[in-house]
Image 1 (cartoon, rainbow, N blue to C red):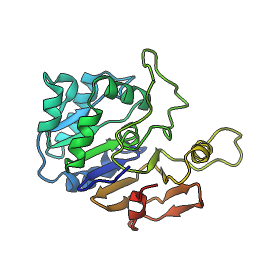
Image 2 (cartoon, rainbow, N blue to C red):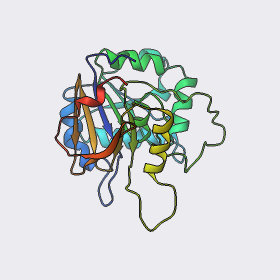
Image 3 (cartoon, helix red, strand yellow):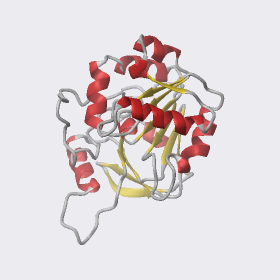
Image 4 (tube, rainbow, N blue to C red):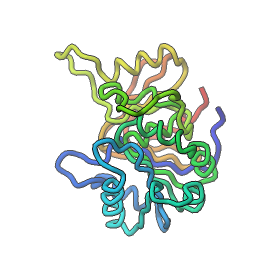
Length: 246
């Protein structure tokens, strides 16, 4: 899988930190990333416990506070045209299975990939960050399962980046005897050697600008690959190696 230039991608682990307003920790980064972009398109398909209308209203409010107008693809008369004309694409969090299923069902996966490969800004959070990867196999949604009415046939995602992401990454608790994020990541590595997996903790962001990758936030990220010991990556350091093809 080749990594194409010039991509501009912002991948958030989460939308809300405890005790903060939605996107509070990410507002400055989002504003700097989007700049003067207009006509921003939301993909709300990860919503399960919230309908698309309420999801859109909430996101319009959040981004409106930053000076941006957001419209949702579910309201577009011509969805393909709305993607092509969008100044940036937002893909929200929720259930990763539902999100990917609905994206494949509406046949927008290839078009979004094409537009982002040409440089259209992409912002994802939680599930929306997961689908930027080659697959959603490192999602945390094994705990929630596949929602009723969602038929998961394909796990291949947007392939905007060559590495995998595990949003909401939490370190294993030594006392509890239950499956952890790391357990699932280690299982993935066994059958998918040579691929980087980033354990992205809440309050953290990955910013990809062309061939440059930067970790933004106050927390380290946990980096995994089958041929090396997991290690911690500090914020602000160069993570360009994540774009190396496996």
